[in-house]
Length: 149
Image (tube, rainbow, N blue to C red; front, top):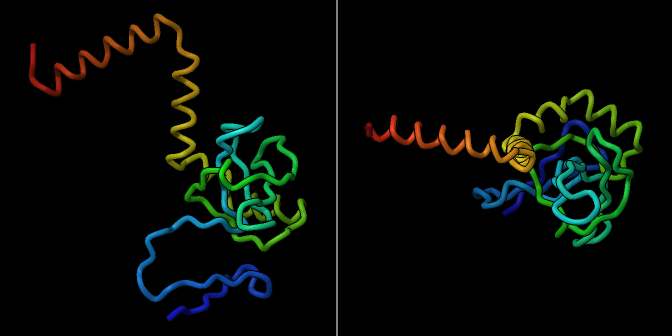
């Protein structure tokens, strides 16, 4: 038994059907979902889904970066927990206003996905001496936590 739930922000154009039982999945390919590009020229950059073309292709636009609106395969994206309440096929001006009003960029920067990207970039830019200092810090932390001298 499914029940239709209408999103209040854009009621005439977006309806989401939810099951009465608890769903296993919480992240869906839907307009307004923030994703990370895992493949291609834009790998490692956040994008937002604007529209769905088919079950395997979506139209995305950059989230606070210079990625133009383009189509992309869903398998190139990893869905994040952040979502903006927008309708399908929003114009660029309306989409940017919704992103700004709902603080989507701030929510994304506080998410675990964005923190993991920052850590990955930091480790990639470490020098040999930085890696050595990190190794010594980990050894000292291990000694403290395990009560060794």
